[in-house]
Image 1 (spheres, protein in one colour):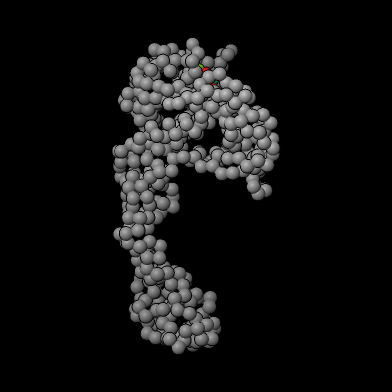
Image 2 (cartoon, protein in one colour):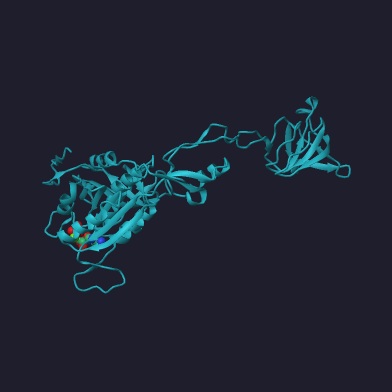
Length: 421
Ligand code: AMP
Ligand code: MG
């Protein structure tokens, strides 16, 4: 790892720091896809990651069929595109789920949406354009008629041997429906990953209990477990662990062979009360990164036994932001997800950025979409302890290191609702 010193002539930071991009690349390069797979029924497949390509062995639709409720017609050659006023004798009725009989030239069959067009039928006219005449034994149509109107051809959606879904896809409702449409009842998916979590900080109190002077409520525990549930992980939660080296080592030892990943919050700096680094080093290996970003400078990454380890900062905003920007892509990659990186798009800053900062900032912003481009307004307090900013925000605006700009500058925006899926 090539840590680099920050020398930018602005807010100089004396430590060795890692850029946001380097940290993300190192993490995702280290993330190995778990190999274990299982079959799940379609009803259980939502949010799971597909472990194989899905090939179709049928055509969908499997037969030419009507796109409308109306009349299937055997149009004679000399009737094609002639001005209206042509009549057809009704000789059949074909509801969906049945097959009709062959239509002779000049004849029509009542047909319903999805029903197979019978042999001989070469066009379908919607019922609103057909008038029943002669005691309902015939229809008359008052407009020119073309061949192949309102006929959905066999294989219109899917052809035999088409790959309909690709390995690594996170299964959304539409993908599950598509699998169902080719008759597949089960899908092979990657097994859920197991994530062990615990939370450091002797000042923390469980919500519902009473605070003593100097204590605060534990919020990271709820943030992290909810974020992991969003990612469909199985969670082993040891809850709060005392701020001692011994207890931290014990917690790690308990989790190391049961988990694919261990995540902690807090205790990851290098103060006397921070035991995560030495504890991980006792059992495995650890890189402590001071990432050139705000919020969320300290981030630890390592290995304990069979498990990868990510130590998030303690401040609640830093913990969530670093989880979303670093842990989330890492987790998605080991889950087998092919699109594991966060997506962003450009918006216009609705604020000036006066001073060049040595760290990249991820500013909590709301988007005003009443103009094009959408404008980003920042929450007035951007401290890493101001959790309200996360609830207020639609996402993060990425402010590059050392930049200075006026309102209107185009910047990257990371939507929170997408990162919460
Ligand atoms: P630390 O990294 O342990 O020094 O923690 C940094 C800050 O985050 C301190 O103000 C902690 O009290 C706070 N903090 C740590 N863990 C949590 C938590 N689980 N919930 C809320 N705040 C926390
Ligand atoms: Mg602490």
